[in-house]
Image (cartoon, rainbow, N blue to C red; front, side, top):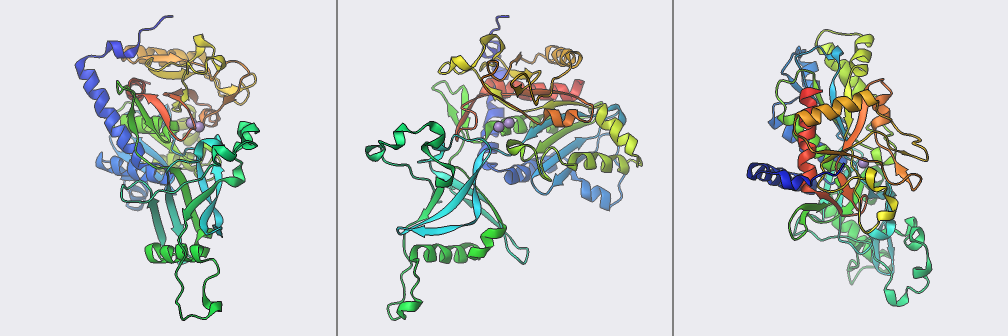
Length: 467
Ligand code: MN
Ligand code: MN
């Protein structure tokens, strides 16, 4: 099954489309480094394309019909977009499901402290990371601080070129004799992820009483800054969600500019291409859906994770706007649906060939990758797509000239992973994993092939149109 590299088949027109898509992609992921910002930017794009908030539809008692476009926003962290098709919903939806959370390091609820004339925020990592990769990098911080009166203070620091950056230090090599003997999991320990945010003490009033001078003057100075810039107090961290991510934009990668390096491509590369496909499809036969979920990296839990009833509720509401208030109709709609669980997969890395079985590995430049199953240790925990459904998908891809490949996540028994596929499959719908191959997955800077990104978007469009 020798396959030609996708780049060799592109016309000038294809290459122009490919570059335009990738420019938009880089801009999106550079400005959408958290689940909240991804939702904000996706809603902006959706509204521009004619989508209306489902809550507005419900409040105004509108009746939805074929051609209408609505979105349901779940707490600003998960989003479902529906382009109502010609066929009744109960015939099933065509769903693209991707996740918009990425591995990162969160700020603790009581984070601020001073030590040796430095101010720090204490951190707790989120998702699977190699902790040693996150030191000595310029870091940015995004999120919200919600005050007791309900005021939401938006924080975005480190990506504007006039902003400072933050960071976590590492031990100098000269004194690292003991550290260098530790195994990689222990080189940087979780509790040692402390974000350095300042070193300048607040200058006390010369005449002030000794007891009135701040004991921790660097921390005091940071608190003064927080008060002036954001009008927040130390206690407000208790009701904050602040996420520490790599600072800097996504960039072209390689002398030939054939790849993209950027933060959070797992899984915003599939989220972006799924969203782009959803917004470009017009008058689908079956209702086209793009579902962007949160919390995938920690098990799809919580109110905004794929395991929540958020999506099911949105489907029930949409049916209701069509005059169908029936539990059975919701079940039928979900059971008859087809889904691409759009998530990245591991690309073959020639630096680490031992973890792959080459026949069943994903390669850059071979297009979108379908994975019949994921899991670990004998497919455990995996959704295993039905052969009948895989055949349907193959045909759609071939009919639409989409380059695709298939893979497993590494050699048997060297590790594994999972996606949201098995969760949707619980409704009895057909689901298969489909995504873009990534190098250095979960590292601060991940790498994808521009051609695979291009093929993914084409694949998602073909699916929404023909599945
Ligand atoms: Mn993922
Ligand atoms: Mn992941």
